[in-house]
Amino acid sequence: MVRVTTTDRRAVLRAGAGIVASGVLTTGCATGGAADPPTAPSSRAPTRRTPAPAPAPLLRYPAQIRHGPRDRPQVALTFHGNGDPATAHTLLSAAEKHGSRITVLAVGTWLDAHPALARRILDGGHELGNHTLRHLDINAMPQTDADAEIRGCAERLKALTGSIGTWFRPSRASRASPLVERLARRAGYPHVLSYDVDSLDFTSPGAPAVVRNVMADVRAGSIVSLHFGYADTVAALPGLLHELDRRGLHAVTTTELLS
Image (tube, rainbow, N blue to C red):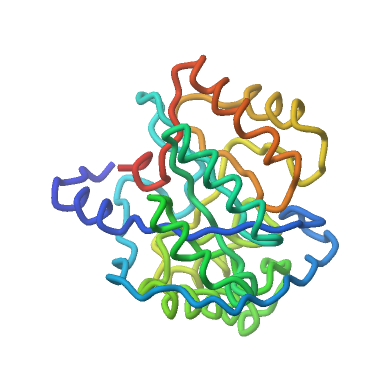
């Protein structure tokens, strides 16, 4: 195990920038699901501010990260960013009202349609990451196409925020193939962000089931997979945050969880 120095830790904290937005999705990240619906373009452009720094490696973690330290009462709620922006605004506001921060892995075409959401998420203290350009089955793609998916989203993030984003998560898969892992590293992402708790919210099981799915497996250090764009997720978030409080767990950004 490599010891993380104070300098390393500060570099990681400086790397924590977030972006997010929401939309009505018809599928989660399971391979072979239906294509995501198009989103209406937005005419609003984000306000230019200080660029976010590039990601820094977390030396004590593997290339693909499923969870953080188990000895601190923190969890990371990570949202796949796509679909109707109204759900994104609602979820962001609910998290902020509770004093929680989230991580959003944004789809590049969704950012094209709703560029102002990038700054909305960052200004709320959340994190932004890369969830590929078009949310296709990236692990099944040939190298050239997979590389274009990663770099295409990274380019959009950099154009909107000055940074490629802190995290990369493969689309339609919980883990990246060895090829996709290598391509992500070459594109500037030292780690692939996976998760150890799946809410299954993209199956629309009802808000109580979303809460039960998470609470059945969550513990200190967990990284939870959730989605923008689903009414069940919007309805479930306040109750989920309440149940985390009852367990003595607090939702923080992924960078904070892993630092």
